[in-house]
Length: 197
Image (cartoon, rainbow, N blue to C red):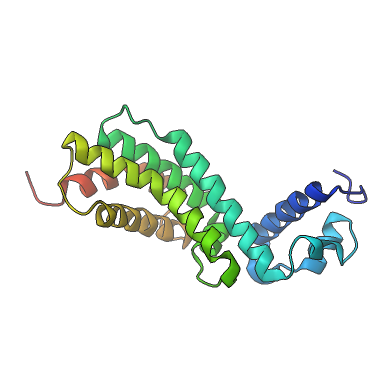
């Protein structure tokens, strides 16, 4: 794609988000600026303002795009015909792989500094990703595969375990391959506990 190529309305927004995510991945959130994105994309410095009123709006759009991508990946990996352990393991692998490949984006997605106007969209993005795990927990309860407890709490515990391993991976405590390699054990211990049997 040529930097001097004129953009149509929808193309520019997508190009700006793509460039912003690349900058986020390579240099971090502090390096993002609308002016720099305009330069990299080959448009006037005022052009990004037609799509993002400020940097916060750009960051919110990146976070929403991240939620959408993660939700699609989770939905694509979910197989309701599987028993709970392999089904949950497949989803855990997708989540951990996403975290390893998109560390800065994941941190942005979970940040609490969003524009008030974006709060509803962020909540919908969270609900869509968490919703995959909600369905898995609800299906497992209907099948008698797990305890009859508050499904929201069980989903929270599951998400906390996954996000904890993801955080260790992003923080360099665990190698991404090592984290993915321990997914079976993570889900096994999550489902069966630590007591000897």
